[in-house]
Length: 166
Image (cartoon, rainbow, N blue to C red):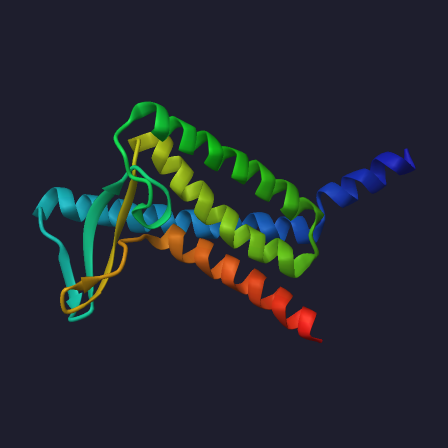
């Protein structure tokens, strides 16, 4: 009886709930932003000019982050999708074993990965729409999920580099 109670406490810990909430918030922010941009593009057929350095312009990405490895080959697409699924499973495993800070950082990455994975399953492509540019130089087009994935990775690496130096 005591073992069962301790096991439930460990599985449903506050830390786990925090990490689930973070991942859900990231997922929802990503979904809402994509729905708004897809709807805008469908209605107006134009990109949205924000300023001289930023446009919101919908691009369907069949590759991985920032449009890398975009191909129309079905087998290649499914292989990448399966690989992303395995990364998500790995992230869930890492999150379950991590301390609170790492749980939150892994959850940022996980929420973004789930958002892009959802799109791959739903649309067979990921809607990217944030176009950062200076004159004619354009960075890779990306989305909110990519932002959270990048922030999570950078903070994980930075945290580890800072801890190593101490």
